[in-house]
Length: 309
Image 1 (cartoon, helix red, strand yellow):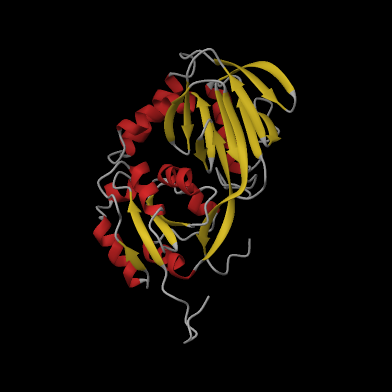
Image 2 (cartoon, rainbow, N blue to C red):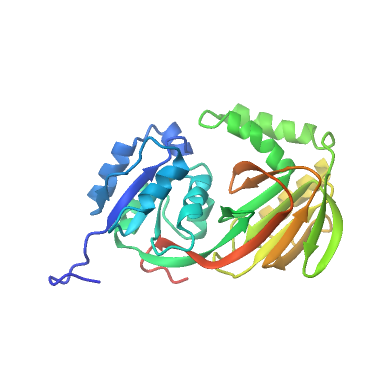
């Protein structure tokens, strides 16, 4: 759409910044500073309706502002998943300012991590539909993880915004020390018409699948592949953990004997207790059975206009 002068109209966005996100905490960025960078990129920033409400309510209120062209969200992958909870199935696109710790979704989408470059994408980019996963009403865009990784995430949350090198080394040492301490999770898995009992140290449901290439650790092959991928690790000794890590690093891990993999569009995981689930890095407790399903092309995201994918 263009104006009579031939210029594209100015995009109107609502900015929702998660002040608890990695770069906003560590870099001292403020919503006022971010607003200035968006306006410098040529965007019209509409005031946020409920800036003092909890993040889910802020996002819901932002999406309901009439006449906006996008909801611009500043934060990490967990913040973006929270936004997807509101925007999945709607016409309003999600604009991403990748200011988290990992920024995996932004990397999968080919978005720039530089703030001003990301703001330019919000101003000139095009909307692209991507897949979203869901488990019991909780939306995730990258992965949903159970078992030891979800347990270890508690330590990361306690250090959010102030984790240094020593803290990271302590987390790795703690992981190795506790490999044999926690019992394996027990559950009943329903997949592809069959049901069986499983015991696992780690289980992940990925929206799409990971890229099996040299150096592409946790990088996905696509964001609109139309399927979920289940990964299951029954046992996880220090030696197997090292093999898995090396396999991911060199891009040869799908055939490792300790790793079970299935492609699907839905699965169910039942258990006798509430399960700790880490969706896109954020931990929630969910009562079983866990019902996973895929929403194909359900979320619109602003990406670079020349994006060939």
